[in-house]
Image 1 (cartoon, rainbow, N blue to C red):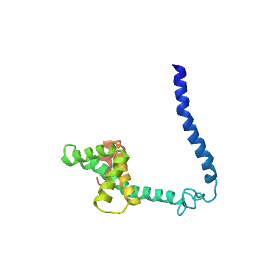
Image 2 (cartoon, rainbow, N blue to C red):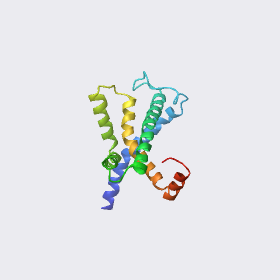
Image 3 (cartoon, rainbow, N blue to C red):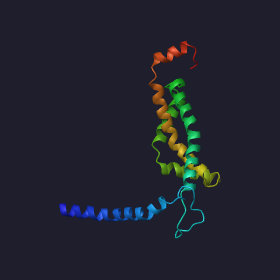
Image 4 (cartoon, rainbow, N blue to C red):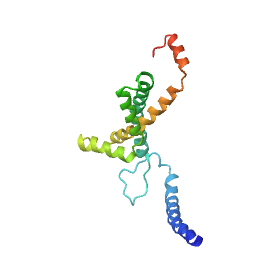
Length: 170
């Protein structure tokens, strides 16, 4: 039985090692190229050597920035509302908490398909990096809300009351 298990592991590891070695052998020359970070793959075919990651790198940074610009303020404001202003038994607070819980469990492919169905298919907007950033917003908002909520909840009530006594608005 152990020989069969060892043989199974070997059969599974051979293709993995083959892919890994092939990727390293073909990828190291590209990584050591002086144009890797400054050129894009625009205009190159699959069989043409050259190109780089310029457009992919810039696009990723822009999408991350757009996502952060939208999700961080929104998440912080929602968390402040939930911790400071919302009555625990109010319908809006319960609905907001429920929606944050639901969003925190959404897989990324579902968020992307939702944005595609809504933004591209329903509204007729073009496929774009902005649509990708919107799907990232759906994934990032619950993380920001939960993190900010926890940070606000660890502030002692005595410290809050002391700051109110000094004239700091709620």
